[in-house]
Image (tube, chains in turn orange, purple, cyan, brown):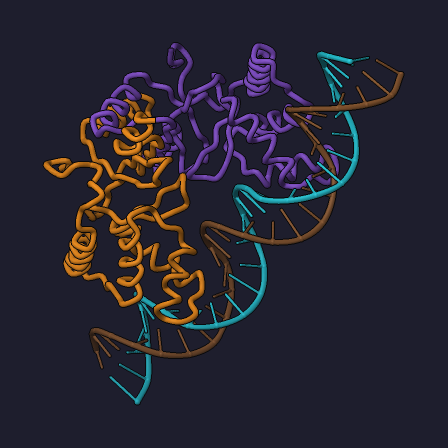
Amino acid sequence: MGFDDGEPVFADKGHDHAQCKARAISGAEAICLSLDLRLTDLRRQVLEIIWSSHKPIGAYDILESLSAQRGRVAPPTVYRALDFLVSHGIVHRIETLNAFVGCREPGPDHDGQFLICSDCGVAAELNDPQMMAAVVRSIRHAGFQPVRQTIEVSGLCPECLEQSRGE
Amino acid sequence: MGFDDGEPVFADKGHDHAQCKARAISGAEAICLSLDLRLTDLRRQVLEIIWSSHKPIGAYDILESLSAQRGRVAPPTVYRALDFLVSHGIVHRIETLNAFVGCREPGPDHDGQFLICSDCGVAAELNDPQMMAAVVRSIRHAGFQPVRQTIEVSGLCPECLEQSRGE
DNA sequence: AAAGGTATGTTATAGTGTATCGTTCGCGTG
DNA sequence: CACGCGAACGATACACTATAACATACCTTT
């Protein structure tokens, strides 16, 4: 497990994002198919909107974008779709931003670790097994049984770091 | 550094919480004295309210409690006091709960790791240098410069875990 | 077609956090 | 002491985030 096997954590700016999106959506389709879940039009649209942004996007921004596609939409509509996507590991919620981002390697029972650039706003998902092992070891040592982990680190992404050094 | 030097991460239920509170407040006083900050009545009251709860407490619960002491209080009053306390490391914000909890070892530039029991609601602060080292190593390996870390793990505390096994 | 579950629509409201502006307080300086 | 300055506080209004509750549509199984 772990998927830093080749792909860089921070995709370069010139990458083909449409392809990321397409890949994510077919991944979601595969999950739904195998688990007998329904990726309805609504859910698919929300997923597409999330992937269309390459930064985490808020529920109300999703709502606005969705309204442009299908007329007036109310908050519960968006939140229900988000609940579905999040609960099946297709989308992650970033707690420190109250925002949502597509998961690059969707699947059940997996909490990613996020690196959030305070400058450009990009959030990269990390999934380092060694790091998780260290975290879980420390937690268990305290006698605690972990269920869900939230690890979010803000700072500067490589690109913005480089820029800030140039000045 | 690190302060699991003796004290258990999860205090037992019979512990003298009034003493925890007193210690926390004199710690805050010490910090403010040394950094030339003003621990005003308001800020002290908010800190006391936070420590009076042994679980993370929401801003509006603080507001309610504060109103009982000094008459009608508006949200900005509470949030300003919280900003002060959080920014100087006297109180931590739990992102996954939108709530606040007193720091056991207050000081600047330190982000704790929190173990939050989904059963009893207690949040224990951990500060494991080894774990942090592993996290930072992984982050830096991705070329990212960390500034602030949020690590929150929900699950079962030792006591609730024990209970759930008995049933 | 009837029944029952899942998904969505709709309205209202709860919960969390800030912008803004005016006033007061503490403190150093002329 | 009066003045001026910045920090802290009060007060109003508002923005943003999320959910409760109930009605309707859809889809599947029988």
